[in-house]
Length: 196
Image (cartoon, rainbow, N blue to C red; front, side, top):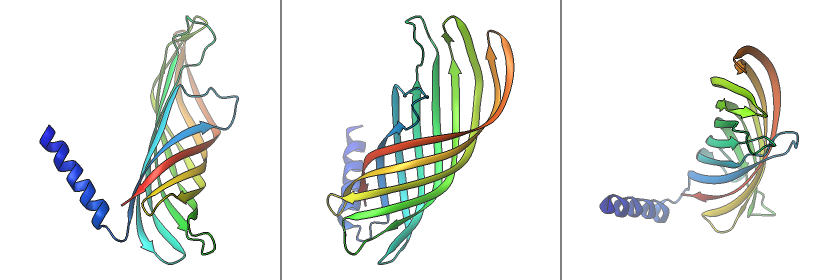
């Protein structure tokens, strides 16, 4: 195990020191719900791996693959056991711009599709709520800005809009109900990144 860790660290440091064009980046973000009628997640994170396949003096075009996790525990009573967990996949294409007059600031635009895999179970105020493991999806638009701390490290803030189509079956106190509706999700992501 120790040898694997040392080898992995050596490979990562080699990539960081010898990569000249920095086509790859990794990011870690904290997502914040902007609509307050939703419960805030008790645990949430978002990670991303980006690859830039076209680099010019003005714009960098690439592919972005986000993976997110959110766990909610809404309820008002201590007896409430309801839990709702989202696993989010967000593949997208993005454009990152270089501004000649502010070289450390980079506006970013991304378009893609979000897929939510979720599970829910437990009770709220004595009412048992369950759902099969479901997946929903929808159009995703991302607008943001990154600021370079150094050549490799940056901080960022992004607005994430998802037009999510929900369809499935839920069970409330043993009775099944089907649902089919569209929902708008507005989130702010703040985080850090590393180019290599």
